[in-house]
Length: 268
Image 1: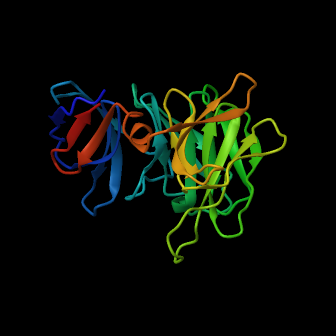
Image 2 (image 1 turned 90 degrees about the horizontal axis):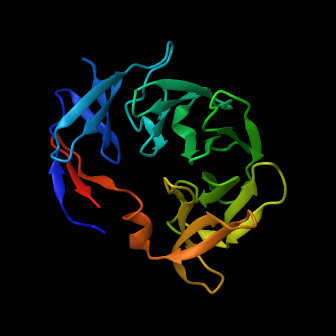
């Protein structure tokens, strides 16, 4: 249950917040020309004191982008974007160890990379491609599974994960009027027929750290609400309606509500 308590954290000089997962912050350190020199993993105590500051350098021949270096994450790991799209990094938030994962992207523009992280899998997708790559989280450099991504005539796919299924929703093209995207679909990782979970959905899928995901979409009765996507005993995706507040706020234990030298954290 939300307590409303806040904690101020004073960041080390020269660091800006890039992402927050629980009581762990990922920050970026800028060099003299305002490029990202390295990332840092900060572990924060209940009183806001920084218990440890782990520097993370990019792999050889790679750089961290200035904008949105963190693609996805949870309390254990984060997926890191590099300037070149051919790889992403799996960052261990406890140790700062980085494992490189090949994306097989169709071009080198990392701005169009997406990634999803579940308790068991990692999915990587380059916008506009007709397939996503999925690896097991416990073997990130191992064999990759290629999963076809259905294309939607008036939108760009957005990917997520639930169990042994790849989820897709669709974002309307840039420059068009705001509105709901295409259907929410689920595709089995081991091959087989896709399933339409919702006839229309918002173009974002939020991963639940313990498993499954949340998406806002239209039910068959026409109502719009948040839906929790979990795996039923028969192995297929199942939807449960939840309030948007539950889907957005209570899924994460800690979030940043002010980005500054002293970001404020709200404990839930």
